[in-house]
Structures are given as C-alpha cells and as structure tokens.
Length: 493
Image (cartoon, rainbow, N blue to C red; front, side, top):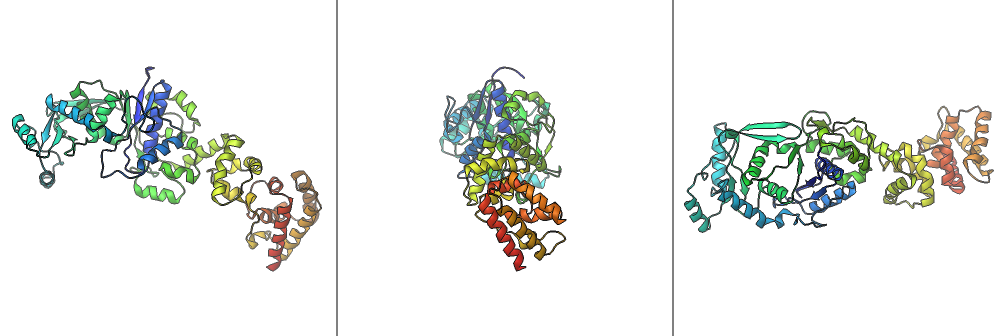
C-alpha cells in the first residue's frame, strides 16, 4: 500500500437507517485515511429527493459518532472542498454535464417518461434487457439546441462507446472487461437539473480529490460507465475497490429485509441505530464487521488503533461474507472483558437508569467485577444485576423450594439462615460464609440446597453473580428483609 496520504469518502444517501454495509465502508475508509496520514470525508448524496427520509442524515451523523469514526470534512464540520451535500452542488454538475455535451461524450435526450416506458415494455416482450434505444443519440446538434431553446424538457445522457470493450480495473478483482455493445446510455442529469449518482459521484470524487473509492459490490454493474465518465473528462482514475457482498446468516443469498426483521426478534440488528439499545459496543461491532471482508484471522481481537496499525487494502477480499451474529456476540463479550471497571460501569449505568433504578455509583464499581465475565451484551447487566439497586425483590415462591425438599422444610432452612445472618455484626463475605457453611455441614444438606434458597431470597433469581459478594453489596438490612420475605412466602405455600 502506497504511503501517499489517502483521501477517502463515505457517501451515503439519506434514504433510511445507516446499516452494516455503510458502517463497514466507513470503517475501511477511516482506517485507510488514518493509516496513511490522509483525510476521511463524509458526503451526503441526497439528490434522490423522492426517496430522502427526514432525520436520516442526522442518523448517519449520529451513527458515525457512535462508532467513533470521526470524519475530517463533512456537512456539519465543513472543509475546503464543500459543500458536502450534493443538493447544494447543483451548478457544479450542470457545468460538468455541459462539458461532456460539448466534447461529444454526452447528449440531450427529449424522450418523455411515457415514451421510455413504452419502449421498455416492447423490449421486454421481445425478451430483451431494457435499455435506451438511442432515439436522441444522433440528433442533429442544431435541432437539439432549438428544442432546448423552446423550453422542451430534456435529460443529459452519457454517450457510451458501442465498439470494442471497456477495461475497468478493480483493486481486488483485477481487470474487468465488458463488451461495449452491452452498455447503456445512462442519464447523467435529470430534467429537474439534479444529477444522477453516475455524474454526481464521479464529479465529486474528482473535485474533492478522492484517491480511493471504496464501495459496495452492487456498483460493479455500472462500473464500466463510471470509468468511461472519468476518462471522458480526461481525469486520473481513483483506486476502485468494490467490497465483498454480505450474505444472510444461512450463507445463501444476500441479506434481505425479511432476515433483518428476524434478527431483531433474536436481539440482533444490522442497523446502527439499534445497536446501543441492544447492548452492543462500538468496539465489538467494528471488530466484527472489519473481519467480514478483511483477510486476517476471523478471531483476531482489535481495537480501532490496532486495526489502523494492521490495515492494508491488499488484504481485503472480494469473497462473499456470511453474517454470523454469534461472532458479533463473541467480539462484543471479548471487548467488554477488556474495558476498565470505570469504563464498563459508565456503559452499563444507563441500562439500569432506563429501568427506573436508582444507581449508586460506589456500589456500581463494586458490581462491575462480578458482572463483567457474565456479560455478552451490555444490557445483560439487567438480568444479572438489577437486584442490586432494587429496594426489594419478589422471587417466584416455587424457586425458593430446594430440590428434594418441600416448602415447609425450605422455610425452616431459610429461618435458620436468617438467625445466623442476624447474629453477624456485618454481612461481609468473611463474616457470613463460614457460619453458613458450618450450618450446611451440620444439617446434612447440600450447599446447593441451602445456598440456592439464600440466592433466590436475596437476589430474586436462581442465577446470579457470586452469592456472598453480592450480599455484601446489597447490604445487611436489605438482605435480612429479603430473607424474612422469603420465609413468609414459603410459609404461605
């Protein structure tokens, strides 16, 4: 990889929620720019006005910030190559479209939408691939000028070569050869004066001095068009990198909306807006997404700085990548283990607060070491640790009955444990565990039977962090009150 500083760009359309595909492109763009001492740019491609969704642009900005991918230039931070919204660059595209018309690389097309649709239907009846039939391609320039002067609506189409072949070079796939007779005369400038992606992206990449264009493989179909547009202007081509496609978890077919809906039900999402609520961390998500398309070991654990140190576009792969949400769990849990106590405490605190719990920061820092190894997602802190911050817990009475015993026997055990705990001046691990273990030995019961009752009584659940450490954090008064409550529940059975 060249050491020359790279200028990369992420150029999403504000037509929906930011998703995994956009995030991975942004990550690779960021890593390449930072690795080479270059710049990472955000550009909003908002010229498809009918599809733009209110709030989508803000969602993109929020998503990039949550991921920690800070861009150097963009619509909200500025930069000398702005504006960074394509709707604010309309005149730039008109000027460039006129240049292409003047040098014969493009032409005005006066075909109406109805006319184009009729032609399309006729082609489909003949089992042809729909394409522009060239009605206006060879129109006399004087006639075209007259019709434009008369105010007739028109688009600007690119004049694709009809002979020979177009050779387009992709950094991952090598030379891609396409017979020119298969290519279409695409619209570059719409009748409302706004550009299509094909013109706007190419012009902006040149004007913003983008050196590397990383994008999804869905653009391979129009790759020959884009290369021909660059060449028609006489510009130097950027390095083109079409990334691997994402497959659904089964590995069969591209990820679709149906699979996305199913993933949400299982606690997963490919949409960045959902990840925080679902308990995923930026570090875990980035590590997971980076390795889908990057030819390094699938289990390599890396933070953003480590990724940047190792990143090389030569190691990217074009092989399709199946989305494996279990891998996301793995990387998320692994990064959670790496967070400091203070950092992890700050990350799980909002989940407790959302549940209406009053979080004591001193207690929280004591809880974190007990929870850390049990967390796969941050919101797991609720199932393992919400009892710490509740005034009382209401266990399922049946859970208080020890295996092999009845309610009366379990109540007697609970009462004896209450007496032992009451006799202690504090409820620290050192004070409580020894006398309770003596009781277990003398009673002939198993530790699972005795401590199982105590666990459910004090935490309200059958599975919890270490019992005695948990009780110490809960506190003496609360523990005694909860055991008394458990006795009452058992005696009512």
